Image (spheres, rainbow, N blue to C red):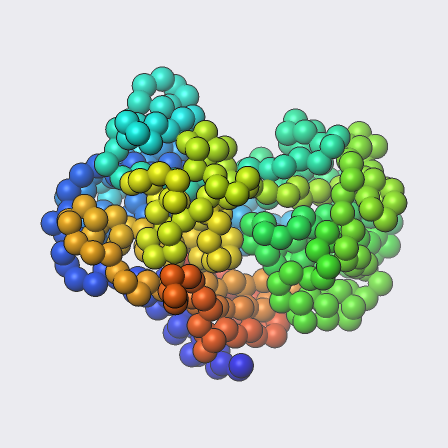
Length: 415
């Protein structure tokens, strides 16, 4: 399907702001206390829209950080298109809406007693709980959390610390070195992001270190997202700079040697970027919410946990059919805010919810592509709406629009 740029941008804006408004004003009569664990795209959006749609509800957010650093758009940081502060959104916007912000870490949830225990001591009670902890990692042999934070950065979360570390390694690598990036088996956070990162590193090499190269070792049988766009980028745009190998899995990592043993042999790197397989955030395990060993099962109509009553899971930790993207998490946050408001008001939830997703990917330092797909509830499951599935080839207009999309997403989720 093709879609005009103007129509796409109109759809993208609507999907952020109005696609999931409550069916009526009934939620304004809702009352109770909602606790939100984690203030990323999903948790922040749920907290914000609960205050907007159900102003009598007391909303408390448990989040250890003072600001959110976005993974969205972080790949353009590596070639120097933006600086790190561009990715930062302080939580003052949420606090200014009357949301109680607790600077602490949730370590346990008693779903029977409806209480959350904090690392700093004490508990917080709730009527409804939103769990939005993002991802955690399944580190391969030889790569533990400490090694990943210093010698082999993944830069797949904790952008504030991980991204500068990876960038410093790229800057320090001699011309003629090799950047080796691994892609885990899907599902993982942001399907196109590993390939976008490879493009941004290749763009930097072409400008500053033309004798260097990028090697992508993908555990999947092929490119997971936007395959045509990225295949063209690897084979044509960055021909001679990028080598892509599908079906190659990581067996073990040797951090100090900057090498990995793979199903295809041992690979040496100048800079090694192992993106580990992922699972739900630790608090989801501590709360007993994980249902398949990695992810949290949810009711596709409300995103309520299938393992515990009055607990809702948004963002990357849930095991729904929705992709693990920032835009989908934002959309899920609105769906949950609507469902919680309805439940607290003693009314039925929206029987026909929709989710929206837009994803931009930088391909060069001047061009970006986008992909959009919206989902609706059908037969108890979320399914893609065929008319919403569209993709644009890389253009300079898209590169400019990418920054507006990200700013809108941050503002809609966190301010």
